[in-house]
Image 1: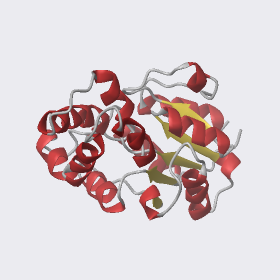
Image 2: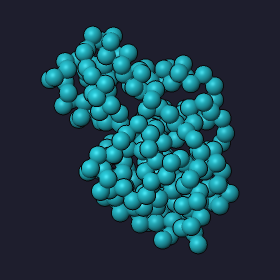
Image 3: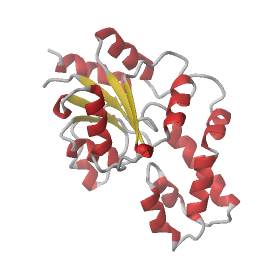
Length: 219
């Protein structure tokens, strides 16, 4: 196995924004007086506008509630996470510092807006020296399409088969597989269903555990 670069998802992987989203989205549903079960809130995690549209007929106004969350996301983020670094997922700093020490390039591939990604990264409380940043808001098809990972590999000037993707979502794991990349699933809010299980290559409890994986891969 040859790993020349690492690609991070962001939400729920680098930062604890998925748990934040569940609270924010529930508040938005209450604001718009939409009665929806927790299972719907779970379904909204990491989804794109196409999936939200699927629920609009059953829960009128849910698209507007989602738009509200997106428009107020960053002010909610800074209110929810009071201090720099408090949003960081376990092992983020250790893994980033390891990659920097070993001079392994890494990028971020996310469905979030570029400016939101940049602000969250600056709020980590330590320097994250990513080489490239790719957002599906640039007009790149969203996961589970592999395009965002392939574009990130291209920007890193690394072959897809030599990239390691770190993901916490079903669609991200599927996208990594279809991009013919190595991947590690790091659980956050999602419990893998049977379909997702067929795509999972490796599971690590936290980002810190990825270091051991890379140490073995580099032998």
